[in-house]
Image (cartoon, rainbow, N blue to C red; front, side):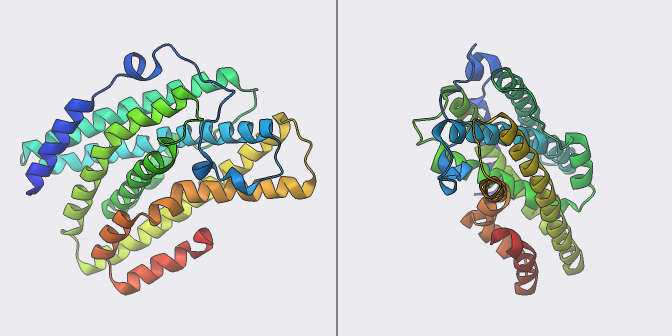
Length: 305
């Protein structure tokens, strides 16, 4: 199948699954705080067996709130980058251009969706939660790196998004129905985005010299390090908030285990699960040398373990 045909299939799928926030997703509903937001396969709360049932659910809901906010955050830079790379198709493949324009439009819609979700969740949670990263500041940092590295990070994010929904969110019947539906509809459009990410990443890779690609690998490593720094800060904020509003009480040793458990979960959610995706490993491995992969592996080792 030619690349133009793959772009065309993404357009066809985009038209078929198109949805609207209020009409199709929210439908006048609120979140059910008596139910989980995230499945245990994503929250990793099975590692914190000493939590009582109410606090376990609360901590999972805090994680779910951050999970939604993180997607709203990264889609700020993703939309900007896809709009930028679409320039290469302006006077060329118009099918590819349409696919990327639709991609950008959907990412703008997703940002609005996650803003709505934050507002709805805030209505049902105690005051004091803070999502610290600024979307524009994060976007500026990411977009300062090479296009190859930015598209690599984007493909990684889109692929773990699909994996999380398929393997954990979809089969869990205990989740808040609205929270589950948010990620069902998100998944429907992200499925096309992952294909487009790969097409654009491979197209960019084909233009690079060996030296440029080597520098781009360093950029990717730097981006993963920046993501990890952001996760460490948000994990701390989320646990601080949890310890203020939970039933508890928890000892200092237990509080430390909660901190370690939430950071572990966040690193798995936003870095490790994507790195371990076979499709991502295949794409990245096909573009890089053994030495470059070793460099990436060494940089990831403290996070992966």
